[in-house]
Image (cartoon, rainbow, N blue to C red; front, side, top):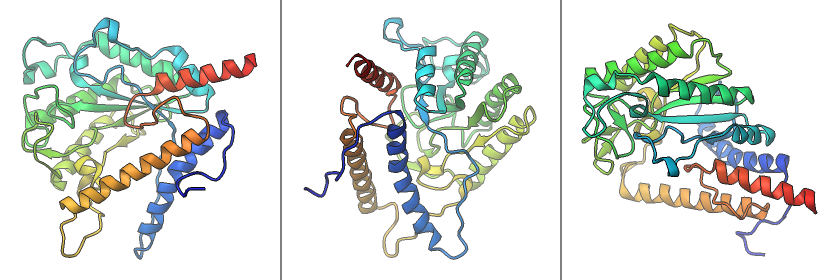
Length: 321
């Protein structure tokens, strides 16, 4: 049998699907732990629960979707996630979705602070619906005032360079902290900003990129967390890895130093991409061997609807046979 084929095929069900997905993820985690544990005195611990779940893209884009193209997460989606054993959803938000401004023009710094409470309450209702089915919600600013890893919207300032942007950033998180202060840490956590990095031009997705200076990232994250915890001291707050997660957050860089060659060189980048491609291929083979061959298993995309539909159809066919 070719080396790239799995030796055993097993029928998939709710529990075996989760076990398979968990095992695939664990392989990467275990190998990383062994590599780091070779450094004397290094211990790895993660205080967060081992959640499993999905991105919900209801408020991902900066502008409201065209009605006939929009997809809203339904209660039925949450029901099926819970029944299949998932316990987590992440809501990546673009802040322009829940502010009021003239959408025919670029947003101004003053307009960034003009909250649209109607949309805020829609997001709160989505959180409540997830909590109803015991799903933890990670609320994330995918597009924060002054920064987003993606293009498609013109920011009026730079989160890492402008005090006005940092004030707006804290203003938004304080709004969410105050509105959700009665939600427990088991119900809601905050993810400050998705994949932070320093860009020469904040509105050019493909421009030069580098690590946010550690002192600046630490200042923004620390001050924002302090504001959040004024309303709920137990709130879980996550700061993503610096330089779109290539580096550790808050300016602590544990990446290995490569003698005679920059760790950011083209050769290293290519090797990293090759590793990612190989890992993705192995995951797809693993899932398809276990019967999941009608969906594309890509963790960076929103496949909740397709995944739920696939297993719903599979279970109905099983009952009918």
